[in-house]
Length: 251
Image (cartoon, rainbow, N blue to C red; front, side):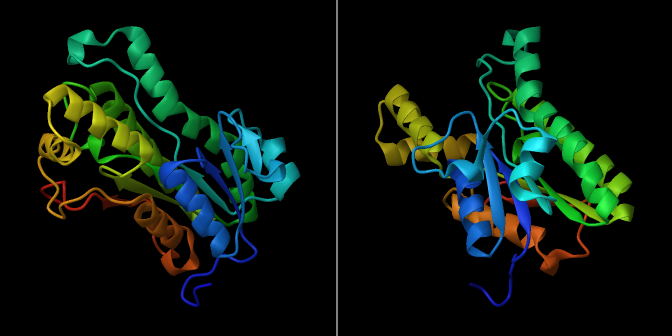
């Protein structure tokens, strides 16, 4: 366990914590001493029951298993909208993107943050996306807009609850090397008739390039989240931290 960063005697909830950056965050917070509850649509076979709840979380479910919550990390997000630009997006597509990328955080915060504020301490981490600042018009307009809304909502929440001892921060990843990302690489490569490395290059070019030359790993995203959730970041609130290998061209 790190002497620099410890989370002993902290309780945490991480949404969508069974794969990718969410799973890496769960594992790291536990390694640092926190008791961590996670949620997803279904429980993996190796997940202990008392550390997992179905995606429809309630205040009672969290408190029954962990007691008072110290850290809330909202990782849930994604996109199922069709490609084809703005004209291809109907009302139902927009509603799905907002329901997945904005409203779960709003609802969960509404259920859990008041208790943090009443106790005078807590940390909320919202995982947004660089797509909020760098959307891909062909495929991510609705997703990007929903993440931008999450970012603005997070800033407003921080202004309201930070004076009550609850910090609210945002982590904004670029491309993360997850299992889903690898499936995307395979699909792009197959569509272009090239190998996986060339498919990866196509994706990086579509993002305007990644100066670091590779996507971030789930563990790297988890490292940033853990730092921001710790007392080492005690004076940080209302801010967004980009982790994208340099993809965003300006600060």
